[in-house]
Image 1 (cartoon, helix red, strand yellow):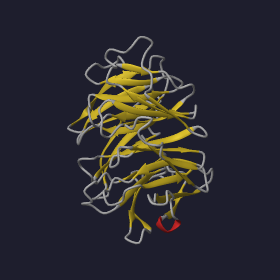
Image 2 (tube, rainbow, N blue to C red; image 1 turned 135 degrees about the vertical axis):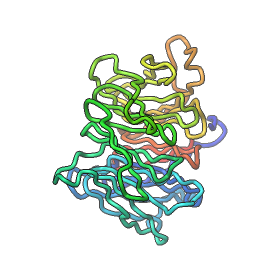
Image 3 (cartoon, rainbow, N blue to C red; image 1 turned 60 degrees about the vertical axis):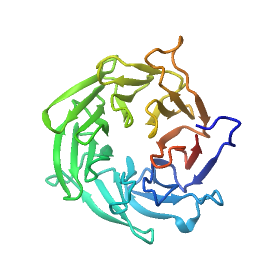
Image 4 (cartoon, rainbow, N blue to C red; image 1 turned 135 degrees about the horizontal axis):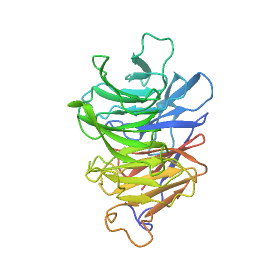
Amino acid sequence: MATNGEKRAEIYTYEAPWMIYAANWSVRQDKPYRLACGSFVEEYSNSVRIVTLDEETGTFPEESQSSFTHPYPCTKILFIPDKECTKEDLLATTGDYLRIWQVQEDNSVEMKSLLNNNKNSEFCAPLTSFDWNETKLQRVGTSSIDTTCTIWDIERECVDTQLIAHDKEVYDIAWGGPEVFASVSADGSVRVFDLRDKDHSTIIYESQTPDTPLLRLGWNKQDPRYMATICMDSPVIVLDIRFPTLPVAELHSHRASVNTLAWAPHSSSHMCTAGDDSQALIWDLSTMNQPPEGGLDPILAYSAGAEINQLQWSASQPDWIAIAFRNSLQILRV
């Protein structure tokens, strides 16, 4: 990470015509500085826009942009985690359903599939989040307000498994390996599931105050022993799955609700959190087992112009973090 005197702070901003909620970095090596962002408009018709930074000009030129309409705001957007470009250039979104989109050579986007597991009803339970398995790229897991998690095979366009995961709404899901995923819920628990033993789940953590919702979950890809969760109106909780129920660290520095977190894709001990205090904070958790007196402090702080709704750390360019606030998508070199 760059020190203060080493390089001027590099910040590039894309201004969307609407408030941004969902956002994600492209993973493909041949598409650097490409991101997708989704609108948050309180009506049926919403949008997703794909933008690419031109390094020479420091702008997001219109000719490299593409957009498509999306029913309701996306709750999450992910590009396929395919660094080696072995698969089609795909993008997935959740909202009312899981949709898979294909980015064409000319940058236009077409819907490849709409995945609905509730064909017997005219109503659908909204999907709160999803995660794309990085080892088995055909596998996508979704979480829903109907208390279930659904594992899809997007190549066969069918459900692999559906599990009643919690007692209340499931707010987030994250893969920890090819067969293992975890979820968090309004019931205040973090649960881990293994697809090789679908009858059991392990409760890793429960909110100290009963029924305080857990809103977000991040699994440390570099060291899968660790995960982090956001507890409503509470600090960020870091967990070691070898020692369930007891947090290994609590991160207290935000002055308002935390909305989003991301583990560094290239370092097992760094994490970024952001929230309603307009702050994005980067943490070095290498000392969390012997925390200093007074608890851990962030090593870097960035103040945005408004409450930060979204934060994404680029897997293919780990020097870059993207944040979204109001109608701005900002990428920062860290």
